[in-house]
Image (tube, rainbow, N blue to C red; front, top):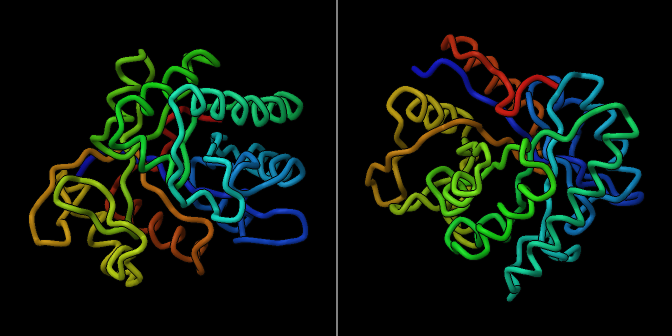
Length: 256
């Protein structure tokens, strides 16, 4: 069993009077908060409040930038040029970094959201644009990407620290990519099955794909989806299991 693991959650995805998830409850169990920056969800007040809550709990704050797709929650692919993506990333992480500065906190990592995350996992040019934007903004930021993906490689090539991200509640394809959400077997709803998947990742460095094949995988950080029902309960169960296995739960980007 590996010695340590970061436990991150996508959050701050409420917008105006509309509420999504229970961020405050989830923050009791995770070590890193990926805060939406307004393009797929979130707004200035939500960003501020979520960053404030995370900072108060000592949870590492990260930007969760997306394609500009509020209606589709950032989960629809768009035809975008690498330079556009570079600018999208700078714009969004700059906004959250400003809020962190006002709070006396520090932005520590960046994790792209949704369709942009999956596009950058396989498209080297988009991955390079994201990594370059993160490096140009702050070379000390950690870039989170799908384990073994183009985004992780681009981060390393840019001289950034990369965190290989894995998922408890998502299924995998034989090439190591995530099963598209459009498929019925994309999500793992059974907590026992999800915990078994995490244990195998940490014990053997592998995950079983939907076709039964075994995929080698590196796990630096594990994602909890804050928009899923029961996210706080799931986060608590994951953390309890990790600690029971003797795994230290610690942020990939260092203590906040």
